[in-house]
Image (tube, rainbow, N blue to C red; front, side, top):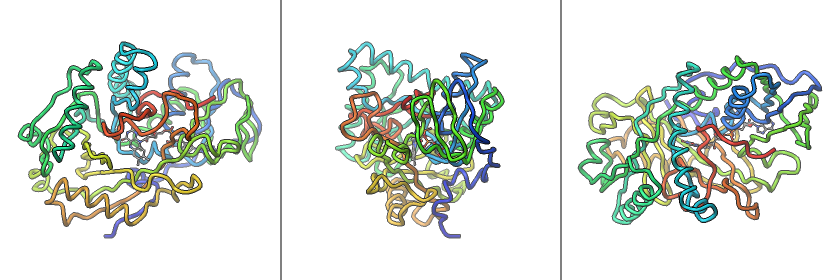
Length: 390
Ligand SMILES: Cc1cc2nc3c(=O)[nH]c(=O)nc-3n(C[C@H](O)[C@H](O)[C@H](O)COP(=O)(O)OP(=O)(O)OC[C@H]3O[C@@H](n4cnc5c(N)ncnc54)[C@H](O)[C@@H]3O)c2cc1C
């Protein structure tokens, strides 16, 4: 079997295409209109509805809930805050420590909501293991680890080569840093579960309903306009396609591959019994998880930006990106040199374009690991997020 490239993502290939919800039937009103049915939009709907149950909330989704990065990501539920140094500079060290503590709690909060709402997203709280594969990476690892401790993450552990191998036998790993504040998820199971949950709470979701323009108190679609005192733009990497927003947010690409299910003997040689999410200290970072059905799903930045803010075609990635990700896989686990890559895909996340005012949401994702932490970024979206705009 050859590698399937695109088809939204491996996670959707596993779960099957969702039955579409009805598009917007015509002009209407709401208390809150949310544009975009990814984690940002759906978590926002969830917490608003929990806080004020009588709110009339409408979600407008161009394709189907989870079509974007929320249905394509690496499934790292993580406490990392890219840009924490910048917060500390702006608001003081103590405030940044409190933010870190809130992020730690967020990991548990997401898992609690999954339990309360009976969302089975293959969640496993194994923490996050970040490995160093060279002396330079080891220096970065030590600095990163010390910084995490300084921001109050005192339950983080630093390992040497032997202790690292006791968790995951990554070829050439000279050390690692582990935090308990992380979990593995199946991204599509989470986003589908969230959509079903908010719908059951009384939120209206219209799919196949692209918003062409957001104006104050108006979300305009080809099928009608939703008028609402609050219109929340939750479109992250797709924002540039909205009228007037071409230069507001840049879509940044990240690509992933999923192997065939590994054999027991292969898993025996690797370890990874704790199902930690796995990252490294390279500048061209990787992120990976051991999936519930025994594969390795691994990603990296791929082609970061496509000219003209273009996005991929339903998750299709470049063949050379598949080769590059396979190389990383084999560098980590040489015994997988002949392994089949079942699926490859791509997605976009958004970063504010240059010139945007300083904000807590300016770029590389926290789940991408410590190499990204010196640049400001949005909170991990697998956590209850703030909408990107009103
Ligand atoms: C390959 C990859 C791996 C990643 N791995 C991780 C990870 O492991 N951990 C982590 O925390 N983060 C990860 N991320 C980032 C994370 O997935 C995203 O930041 C997050 O899912 C963004 O959620 P969102 O709801 O803001 O945007 P999206 O999930 O992109 O949702 C936006 C939605 O808006 C819809 N939309 C777009 N335009 C319109 C319109 N005009 N009208 C109506 N609807 C519209 C889209 O169809 C889409 O469903 C990854 C991202 C990628 C691409």
